[in-house]
Image (cartoon, helix red, strand yellow):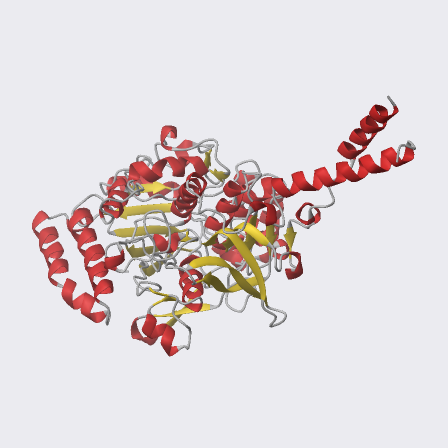
Length: 599
């Protein structure tokens, strides 16, 4: 009887003790200390804590038996949080600006030898923390064209294959006053249970209120474009939480609600420098990631038991692949980087939207965003109204959101001229491709495929060839009240919507990833971000990128790469927790038996 009583006492004590034997359970979930993860194995190592990376962190850590590490080069954004959350401050005092610690410092050369800043956020949440908050989907025709590039694919990247994931990410709220948007909202086109809040600003500029009726008078449709007919003129919803008017981005939507999960760690201010591989087999197997911090040159390492997932964005992803020996061999040779896989498409097929802007001086009775720039007292009053919850009175609550997607048929308004223009694009294809200077036949074949697909399947459709963006913030000339309109070419020539540098195309067409997002000729390595989109899309890429990551997470969970490290040898996870609990129980039992005098 004494033995049983002692054992019951030991059991109660063991179950009541905190599990301290598992290092991950006591480690900070968001850390800047590389020693917290150095030398440790995680099931999944995600490089990049942006739009896609934090979706993946959330979804993959839903499984308690899997451990997840996110390596992010930026900080947590707390020092600039007001500038992130208040929509208008994106335009007034943005975060991803030249010489900012939260910007990667990219510059792009353009026609005439000019250089333009290419903002890319170095911050937890990525560019979803700093962008213009547009939530715009592409059209069904574009997604179906994407799927047509992938014959016999084992995954469906058509509209029907990706649209469910668009809905999964969205928590939609209709406009408070629908008459101000002029757009007929169809709520069945939207998701209502997702983590990303999507709504309309509660303050409406006069120019925005006039936008949709104006385009309707020009013959553009003004119905809700989010169900696959992504053309016409409309006020687009924004990534705004309607409860307080703040930006809803990947950190607040996907990370904050799950940040205390015991199997998820976020490492900040640490830049991945190399993916490591086991090359002893017939196919190189990703084994982990080397990383360094900005403060010193020490190289640290984490192991990936199952997969390394690169979500570094259109510029960061191909750069990391190339530094790791995955890329065009001639380029790697020129930098002295040993080739792991000769993959010519890495860093190629870059696409973006060419943009020009036109500005008009408005009357003195027209309210524009210039007022926030010109009058600091007025701006402070508007910011106070925002923080006081008076969103319908505050210009600070309203980003730009007037969009028009105009097809070639509407631009020319003449079938003959439209047909001639499309034929000229076909005729010019060879010259355009020759201009790229491709020396690899697979790259040339891939460019021919995407170019001809966009011309043949999209140019004569209703899909927008030109995007019109209304800017109620004007030119910031400090004197006049102005409004502006930006026009951006959508197809097939390549604003800040870069894509396609790790294209999902057949390998023989210069592709980098297969339809399951696996990097060709590797094992345990995927790319999941907007760099995989193979064609130019008439959309803003935040929404599609969320959906790509949601779909990618489902693929991984359904068919994970078998762990190369036995789960019992991992630093963390439920099996380690079980072992730790058992050890605590055993030691406590011994203690109780000793106290009882039986040992």
